[in-house]
Length: 222
Ligand SMILES: C[S@@+](CC[C@H](N)C(=O)[O-])C[C@H]1O[C@@H](n2cnc3c(N)ncnc32)[C@H](O)[C@@H]1O
Image (cartoon, rainbow, N blue to C red; front, side, top):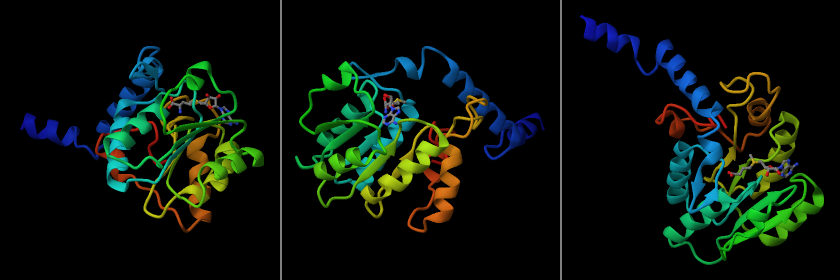
């Protein structure tokens, strides 16, 4: 009897389960010592390891021609994707391109033949022209991880959709902001940009199947 009540209480689609997962998500996000201190091969990487696992699965399954990320910070994610491309035996033309409004010393010091950096506002026409010049005629995978206001993400979605290959992913990062479930006072953020984009763009659909397997993601619904 107790076992069956417990089973019902903690059902993975149930209210209590969702509360526990959301509380763990908040605790883990708010700690100063979790994602803010994570490193990949010695380089700071501002990501949740559960998401890095999913990124690895996506890259293996879709084998994108390139990976393009807005928001570089310390560059750990760029090195992660460049290393994944090495591991799956991608050819040398599979570049990893990072765009940041102010490149850090750590990003500039990245030493990997696949990595290219562009400095400037991710939505500036001159920056987009530089990205296009680096990725002629190819389409691949894109992750948006720069300024997390809804307006900026909405502008990025319109600007970077052209770089996404059919069957590949356009990841809107940090959709957990503004109370989904972290940082409730953030204001409209990535999550708020995704809905209007999807309603206005029939070429993209939201894939929630991958992250749900791991209970939560910093980029859930993104
Ligand atoms: C969350 S961090 C990126 C973390 C990184 N992607 C990682 O996984 O480790 C956000 C970065 O976005 C950059 N940024 C902020 N506003 C930007 C803008 N308008 N255009 C491009 N980059 C911007 C910041 O300089 C910062 O380095």
